[in-house]
Length: 131
Length: 131
Image 1: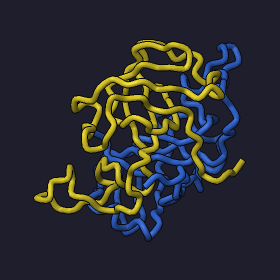
Image 2: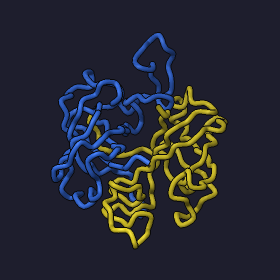
Image 3: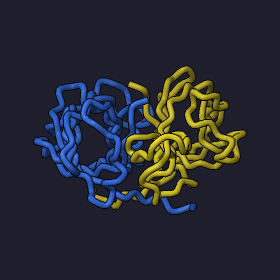
Image 4: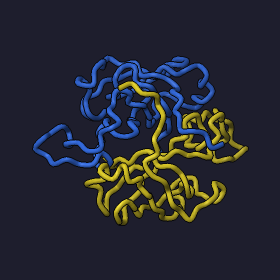
C-alpha cells in the first residue's frame, strides 16, 4: 500500500484564463467560471456529486516554480519576504492548488464550476466535498 | 517548469495515533494533538508561521488504497455506495489529506499542532494559511 507519492491527474481544467499573469490570486477575487473535464476512468468516483454542491478542488499548479521557499506576499516588494508556508503563493515545493467552488451543472464527465482562478490546462488531482 | 506531479514530502507527522483503525475520521471528531517535524531543507519556507496560526496541512495518506472509486459513507453498509469524490474517504485516487489545525507552538523545525487525525509517520506535503 505504500506507493510513491506520484499524483495521477483525474481531469483537467478548461478555462478562459490562459496565462498565470491574467489569473486572479484567489477564486474570490474575480475569477471566472470554468469546466472540469474528468478522465473517463474516474467516472464512478463522481457518483453523488450534484449541481449545487460546494466542493474543494485540488489541482496541480503545473507552471509553479517548486524551488521557491520565500516570496514577497502578493508580489509587493514593499512587504518583507515570507516563507511560502505562511502564504498562498503558487510557487512552493508541492504546488497543490486548493479551490472552493460551486458546481453549476454536470453533463457526463464535464462539471461546470466556479469561481476558479486556475488556468486552462491545469491538472485536477482530487475533488472533495466541503465539510 | 512543467515537471511530473511527484510530491516531495516536506516533513512528517508524529502522533500518538499509530493505526488507521484508531484514527478519527476528521480532526473535529476527537483527534489528538500532534507534531510536524519539518525537513531542514524547507526551514526557510516556514518563516512567518507562528503560534496561534490556523493552518491547512496537506498530507499524503500513505496507507490509502488508491484503487477505490466508491465507498459506503463512513463504512456504513446500510448507506448506498457513493463516489469517493462525493466523500472524504481516505481511499481515493490521490489520497491527499486536508487538515485544519491550530499551531500551538514552534521549536525550530518542530510544530505542535492539533487536532490532527493523521497517523504517525504520515508524510506532510504542504502547509498553507487558512484564508
